[in-house]
Structures are given as C-alpha cells and as structure tokens.
Image 1 (tube, rainbow, N blue to C red):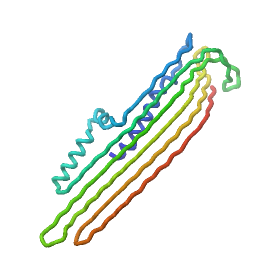
Image 2 (image 1 turned 120 degrees about the vertical axis):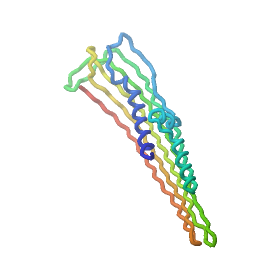
Image 3 (image 1 turned 135 degrees about the vertical axis):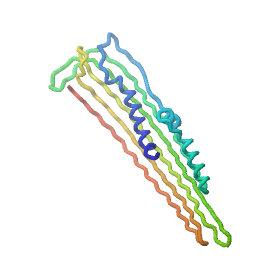
Image 4 (image 1 turned 180 degrees about the horizontal axis):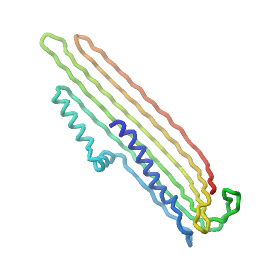
Length: 228
C-alpha cells in the first residue's frame, strides 16, 4: 500500500496538468476576432480513498478494520490509521493575438503569423500521515511479564508550484511555426519516520527510540524557443 501512496499523487498531478494543457496543443482555424477565456482543473486529496474505492473496489478503511479484528483474535492489540489531505489545482488563462506578427522559422525565413498565449498556474500541496500502534503483554503465574509495545508514525509533505507562459505561433494555413515558453517550477518534499519500541521479558526491558527524516527542494527557471 505504501507504493500506491507514493505513486498515485504523482500520476494524478501529471493527469491534471495534461488535462489542463490539452487545448493548448490543438490547432484551430485562424479566428475572426481575438478570444480570451479561463479554465482549470482541481482535485481534493481528502477524496483519494473514496475515489480509489470507486475505481478499484478496494475500501482502505474496511481493510484496516479487518486486519485489526484479526489481530484481536490473535491476542494482541493493533491500531492502523492513515490520513491524506491537500489539493491540486491547475488554472489556464488563454488569449489570442490575431494582429499580423513576423517571426523567423527554423530556416531563418521571415514568416507572418498570429499567436495564442496560455498562462498556466499549477499549485499542489499534499500531506500524508500514517500510524501503526501494536502491543501485547502476558503474565504467567510465578514469572515476570512478557510483552512488546511498538509505535510507528510516518509523515510526508509534498509541495509543487509551476508558473508557465506558453506562446504558439501559427500561419494563415493554421500550421504551427514555433513556440516560446517561460517556466518557473519549485518542488519541495519533507518526510519523517518515528519508531518507538519497548520489549519486556525475564525482568528486563529494552527500549528503542528511532527518528529519521529527509527533506529536499529545488527550483527550475527556464526559457525555451522552438521553430519549425
């Protein structure tokens, strides 16, 4: 299940971006007048469990409940929990400039074109928490207590921001002559894992307290130009 948790957000964010950008790639007839419009796609990550159930039929909460009930029958306590929150949003502002413009194609020839510009804004924030708590204790007559107590807590935070200005140039035959793109992207990840273990037996006790974490971030600023 942990693998699913890591890959699903990335796939859905990519799908949101592709869905929002899909009209950009379409080449339509040169418009009689310039147009301007807005559109976007949003996703609430608190709906992830219910959406997965609708798609796959797997109910995560029912699965946790069944596992915890099996643990009770086996004679030890087990608590499982997970929570995913956050949102992903992609917004596009698209405008057209049908006034005659001149650019050079790949061969260096001057070509008269008109342009379509899309201002794309992506904001993604995801917070995921998971917890495992289990314990067992047994005392027999004339002996010391024997048991264990284990707590595991995992947290992950992911942030992605993208600002992109994309302009495509088309001629009167509706052929794509070139495109310009300015891109600014920032990615941040923060992950933490805490493990607390207590083992007891034969009058002795062993404690393990382990905490680790990792965080990283990077930014990309890029300008690109394509000519056909």
